[in-house]
Amino acid sequence: MPREVMEYDVVIVGGGPAGLSAAIRLKQLAAENQREVSVCVLEKGSEIGAHILSGAVIDPKAINELIPDWRALGAPLKTPVTEDRFMILTADKAYSIPNWLLPPLMSNHGNYIISLGNLCRWLAQQAESVGVEVYAGFAAAEILYDARENGGAVLGVATGDVGIAKDGSRKPEYQPGMELRAKYTLFAEGCRGSLSQELMSRFNLRDGIDPQKYGIGLKELWQIAPEKHRPGLVLHSQGWPLDTATGGGSFLYHFEEQLVAVGFVVHLNYENPYLSPYDEFQRFKTHAAIRGTFEGAKRLSYGARAINEGGLQSVPRLVFPGGALIGCAAGFVNLPRIKGTHNAMKTGMLAAEAAFAALREDRQHDALSAYSAMFRQSWVYDDLYKVRNVKPGLKWGLWGGTAHGGVHMWLSDLGLGALVPWTLRHDKPDHESLKPATEMPKIEYPKYDGVLTFDKLSSVFVSNTNHEENQPSHLQLRDPTIPVDVNLALYDGPEQRYCPAGVYEFVAAGASAGAGKRLQINAPNCVHCKTCDIKDPRQNIHWVPPEGGGGPNYPNM
Ligand SMILES: Cc1cc2nc3c(=O)[nH]c(=O)nc-3n(C[C@H](O)[C@H](O)[C@H](O)COP(=O)(O)OP(=O)(O)OC[C@H]3O[C@@H](n4cnc5c(N)ncnc54)[C@H](O)[C@@H]3O)c2cc1C
Ligand code: SF4
Image (cartoon, rainbow, N blue to C red; front, side):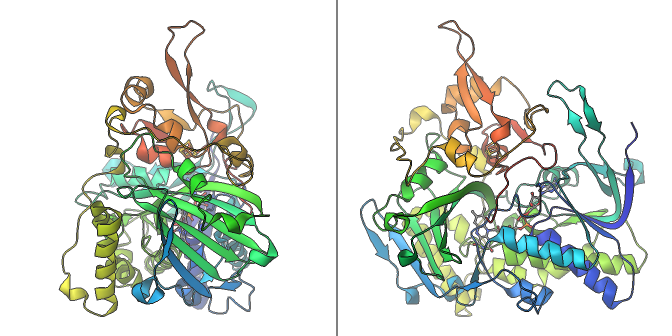
């Protein structure tokens, strides 16, 4: 069956803050210059926002530039930050760090506590109102390339076929994917985008660049008792329940309608295969300084998503013939600020400006080198440059790393950044950091109480995750023997613990006593966090987009 073909000037893969900002900026430039530019955004979630999970405290710098009258247009930025607290936790104590000790760039004054999913829903309305075609429920599954002898440029993407059964046969409702061809294709898939990974490898975009570093962020949304609600309060912590060698920390934000967003990030360079980021998060909520917030409260939602942590030295080359990487598909998160949205939006806008200039010159399918140059001169670059040594310095542990990062950021804030001209490097990718189980202590996690702490399956339930069951697994094993022969044998099956949705289980391989184990993959539970694609020690798990519309349905994460 031939595929339907649609032609655009620009196709954007991913309807998050980066993709939507790029789309809006293109249409703004087209209107200012009285030119027609056709723009389409593809989003794999069932609707815009369905797969978006963030903290989120956002720096309004980018939205101020993109849509200066966002207040009048009803943007969902309703809760300005009124109070910033930072704590170091031990098992039974909480030490508050006074605000005057924290580098000013960590201050959240002027920022807003929001649901990023809801901001994306609003951005999509703005995009549609200026003529962007937004298609949710369609995953870009394949990149279309020109023949290598013609330069091999990216010509667009194709959406996945719909209606393929688990065994590969076509179901009655089979529909072939659609080809969306474009003069330029912008990839805005967010952290560890599957097509973006392919592009980095095909065009050698990471050659000579430090490996990308990641964290897994787990989050719950709660509605709390009115007397405990402090709208505008932003609370961060480091320390317990993690040990001092494992990086990570918590966030807890009070915002509109008695809502509290609470979450925990664990850096994925952790070494102990017995560590379970999910259980660290559940345990965090039980700390004496935290649990009171949730008395009489109700959990509304749960989800998880990987976050880029590598910073400036891990940003790949951004352009290739026919397109560019924008937002977290490239990785512009400022880790100590735990903020990436403003940079995702701004890089989307910069790529849009470069693409528009190229279209005006009747160019197509070449590299948008102007975007790379604009990035280097932008405030995104400055934002990341100031904190570039914070993450690599965490190799000195909680205390050494925090002190080093603090001094580094203070010097930048005081205009003395030139005193630290060097850039520390990231030595290895996160999948190489696990140590054999026999060398590491087992971790016993407390039982869930069903009130403040919950098991994985009831958490997945409140993420509203849904996939068509009869489809090929979107979690592909490059070598089916590795899970048992390597992961289970050497690391006691770490995928059982790092997956925040209970997708991976080692079960008896047969009825007989000596049958051994096999890996069972419960793909329909996947919340699309991408952690398995990152952390599997042999890079044996390949995450590909399932049928469009599948995955979590986050209401307002
Ligand atoms: C736990 C956590 C807390 C955070 N807290 C904050 C915070 O407080 N403040 C802040 O500024 N930033 C925060 N961040 C970072 C911020 O969320 C990201 O920087 C930002 O979301 C990046 O935007 P993006 O558009 O690049 O990617 P995303 O927001 O990830 O959006 C990508 C979109 O593309 C879609 N997509 C992916 N692949 C495909 C495909 N093949 N086909 C179609 N669609 C596809 C996805 O479904 C998604 O909707 C946090 C991140 C996490 C994980
Ligand atoms: S299967 Fe992978 S991507 Fe899906 S929830 Fe588990 S770790 Fe995340």
